[in-house]
Amino acid sequence: MSAAPQFTGWQAIQAEVLRRIHAREWPPGQTIPGEVALAQEFGCARATVNRALQALAEAGVLERRRKAGTRVALHPVSKATVTIPLIRQEIEERGAAYGYRLLRRQEGTHAMLTGPALHVTALHFADDTPFVLEARHISLSVIPQARNETFHEISANEWLLRNASYTSGDITFSAQAASAEVAQHLGAETGAPIFVMDRMTWDGEAAITAVRLSYVPGYRIRTVIGGS
Image (tube, rainbow, N blue to C red; front, side):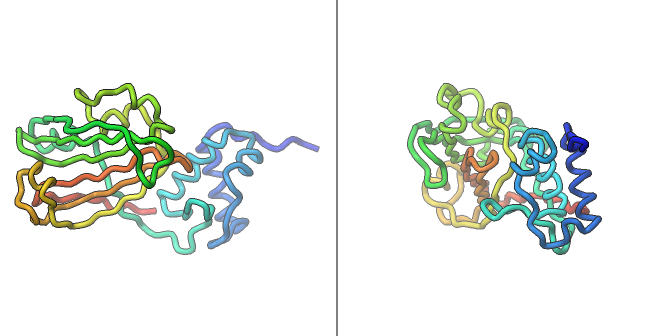
């Protein structure tokens, strides 16, 4: 009896998953085997399977839900991709000079993070004018090295992009009335309508960070429509 084939790269696993979907071995709506089972079948690391499935989920071929598994999409559709750039890069691409100021750094907890969390609040500037207020919690259970970073010279946004990997994120956009504290930091009037982005970032099942970004009045975000 011949041994099962080995899949050493995520692209090969992605191709095999697509083959099974197109051959209706995994029809639309069916829940596919979990990452552990697929890693054992393909003879590779679970992280390799995760990368392949995540790429197909981003393309709209699969639907992934934590604790509910992964299933073949019933109706693959085009998705709007929101690019969340490095804040410094976003400001510089607008032709403005970037500035940064740490406002607060302290340890505590967060309802969505397991164990102790580092709370970092900072203000980002465009040409010396407030641009966005970053209020972030970082899981010290998942990213313990964050405890050794002062965040005086580098923002948590930039530090995490350099030092932490992630597999998925949950994003919520909303329009809110600026609180007195937020308004003071942004140089706006209390109650002024502002654009707020709340984001949770995950590495597999582990929540890495929770952040709220509060932008100055008039801020707009751009999305790109891509085909599946």
